Image (cartoon, rainbow, N blue to C red; front, side, top):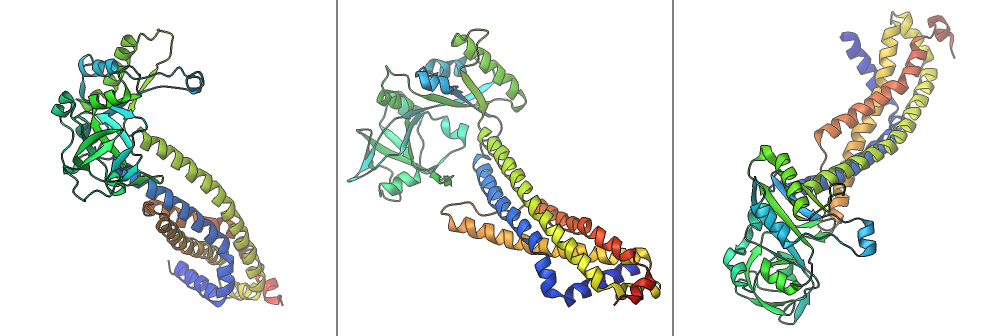
Length: 406
């Protein structure tokens, strides 16, 4: 152990004696590590933000939506979820809990005291807040009586409230929505932005009122979220829903489904796949940068071996073994790479945090501990791998020839 401590001390002394050269040698490792940490911190920050928004929904919530491909859009023959499909969910599938249909009202302009905007407007039922874990911040949500009586009431998002410059507590205020007067009964908890788009610029109205505004004769774009009574039966319930809907929609046995039943948090899973791909691509690019940095370290270490030939001869004459010389030069190479890696981690996180702060409403940068450890460890490994040849050269020098070297 004493020999390794002494080798570490000698390696640190050698690096300190050539500070500028040591720093320039680590630039390749530094830039590569900083790049990957900056990108990972931004991607992980966004991923954590999205996961947080879907965390309350849980894994027992499923979403039913129509399935349309390019041919459907090209021919105009779109598949739709109907009110009859919603009723099948409610009454004909065992294991389904609460069902919250959603109907988007197209092109519904909102106006209030001379100010107007175009929010997202959808109709839903009282089950929505429990199924989607979205609750009012002020006032109340839509209740069953609102839908049964077709009351013109609305629950709005905070951005819609602010865009129309309504009071902070707008309960009881009336505003125009799609050419009709609605009374504000609640303001939903803010959800923030995702990919630069606000999730709070909307109004929720009773489902049957929305059907009337969309035209009962038309086929509106419906979807529905529903809960599963028992978490362990989620796959079985999904299959029951699929079979019941295929039967009610009269889908032929050899035809593909015209709808899809997916987990409500499937967007998170898809985003995780995207972030994984981005991280892999960045890792590949950074790998090239680290390769260049490793070659730089090997080059400088070879120069160092040549410069210190007499020193190596003296060490061997005093009893230093081949292993002692090998360990000392490997430690120098590893320390050079590790230094670049540590500085790169700090600069990369600072860059990621700075970029996140400059983009409005972008989630704060986040770097998992495992990424830091892997980055630092990989940097040191690069130093060891590319320092192996110079260290072997130094360890293999003949002591007599080394002492004669000028």
